[in-house]
Image (cartoon, rainbow, N blue to C red; front, side, top):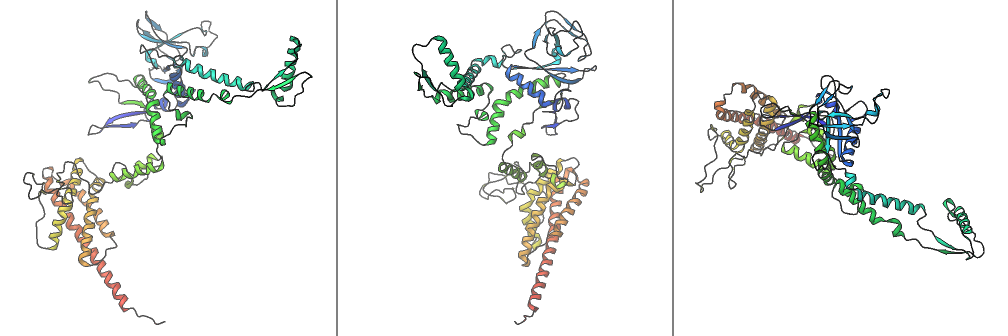
Length: 545
């Protein structure tokens, strides 16, 4: 259980953050009072809710009316009550200020905790009641007919619980008496009542308890008749299974969680989801709403600011799937850009990697916006569909505002091809950068580096085919792309928002020419290296054996 703060980003989406600096965080998540931990208090609170149908927590305040502790109160000693006269409450150690309860206002009366006060006071005895204002009590009723006092779960299910107790009692007595007498002793007809009692007592002392199974001696005229036992009557298996399922139905607990393995079961994640959805969700929902209402209330409605803080449970550990499912989820998240390396490590409770690259999000280079017009019958490979010649009803896809001029040189032809393939992706990344008011260097690297590396690879492949070589080392071009993006970040301060289309075309053309120049140089170096190696191999003299 944590205290969360709800904020909103610039797109209006809610962001939930654990606020460990909140004044109530330690009380809610760690130590509600100086006598018990949060787990102990919450366990008692939920037990009261499930068994009594009512759970109470008294709020202790200091002289400044600030909350300093939470105390669970016994539902058997605490009840809601509406007074017909005004009540004046004097200051007490756990509420050091007076309180006035107007007539007709709901309050709570309790005797829980009174026996702990100083009994030297003549007026302090266990029969006294103390009044708790409604503002100082958190009350979660179960099934309530009037909305104020919950019905006792044990009372409503008394027949089922009574049957379970009777079955346990029957089994205990059945086996305590060694299931059934193993035989009958036939005595002579002329025995008196006192003689029968003496014989019965003597037989129990000789054959009962730890002496069971020992050799027995019968007087003359006495005979023994064995009696068989009925195992079905002794086990009552079906009755016990039925009772177990009935108790599970009362508390909405799946039977497999209490040992019923007769029926088929799904995987662990589905079982946990079923338990949370049908058993825990109603209970935790009631607790969450009541704690929010009393600990972190809204101070008004309408234009009055609302309290952004609330209390919630973290159930992620209960929905933790197996290793194979987690691996698939993390891999998909990394591939589609909604998880980074540190996000995956956080799910595994591992410390984050202190490296900026671990905070980066990756996306496929063939992705584009849904607003980009695409004709499924004809595409240029960059997410920008052109209209077929015979379809005049459709409008052609928008072209770059300043496309590179067509020339007859190989460099100009390469620019035209790269423009068709990658200008759409470059333009999309450029638009993402312009969304930020003041984009930093990491934004440029994240949005444009995949496109520039793809242009580098395509240019490298073309250069290898033209020069008939193989470029094995791309360190120089990798370093150049990083430096180029840093230079683009420095040039961004002079960009004019009114000419974004021209800036996009200019930057794309500039990047294509610069990357092609550096890649051609790498290919030329690789060509020279290959020729040098071939020449050395030809001049090598073969030594005869």
